Length: 115
Image 1 (cartoon, rainbow, N blue to C red):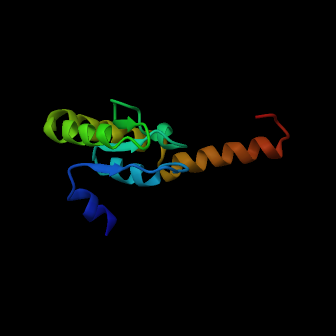
Image 2: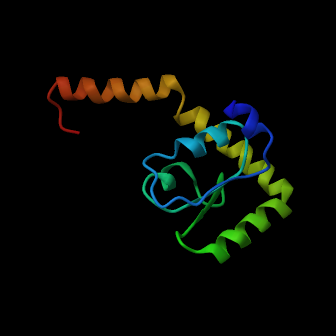
Image 3: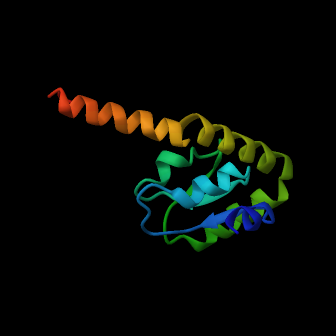
């Protein structure tokens, strides 16, 4: 029950070293949870540092700890980040939006257009 688990947490933290798109972050954002992730691969496409979460450099546990503490202490800021994250997911990553993007891509390829 991922939505139930995400609803019960105050903050989603995933200091990964590899992440293609950041689906786990999007799931947390959809539940209005602030997120902290590492600035690797596709994570930066999902997390806009300071707006809907925080991006930290990989392998930096002291900055990770400071960022976790800062986020948990500033509940108003965390709430705003959670709302911004949900807004971003709804604007860009719904099933309909993903379909539109894929449809556009395949249509262009079939028509022989350069991307």
